[in-house]
Length: 165
Image 1: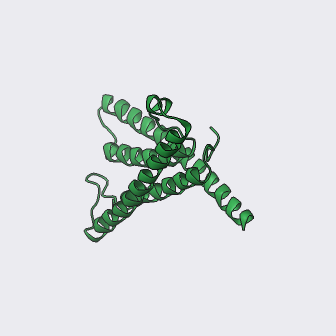
Image 2: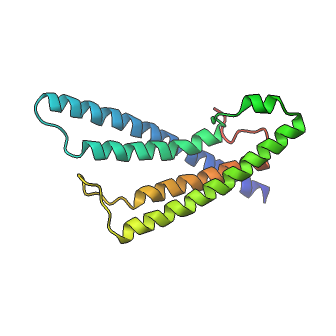
Image 3: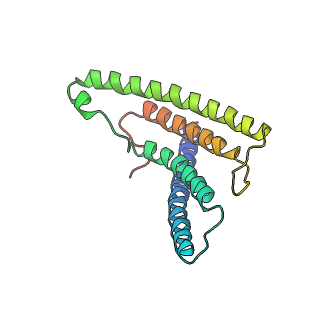
């Protein structure tokens, strides 16, 4: 059983790293699209839909980078509060914050998915590119599910990062 669970954690680790690479490529695409649009505008024409494309890339960059940041514990901790507490107090605070995080990301995943379904039913599209947008909240929902899993790992394995930075 332990071997299966460890294999599952390793698979999730690799997947989170893959999403982090996609996030980086999304940021790179935002730079390239913006730069090309500026240069073409100086030449008299721009890229139709550049604003929509940059918005899509930004959503992908943010949604796919959050699981990695959570995995390496790259979030901002309230250090001054932790240093004022005893070891037991830090454990209680950490557990409380993780429980709240689990509830928050479960709620965000569920509500984002429902919002994506509503966008699918109403056939919402981006204004310039006419690309359907239902999948954007679904990506966010998927990211929240991964964050939920990573926070759960941190609760089960205190003091360990899910991924070493």
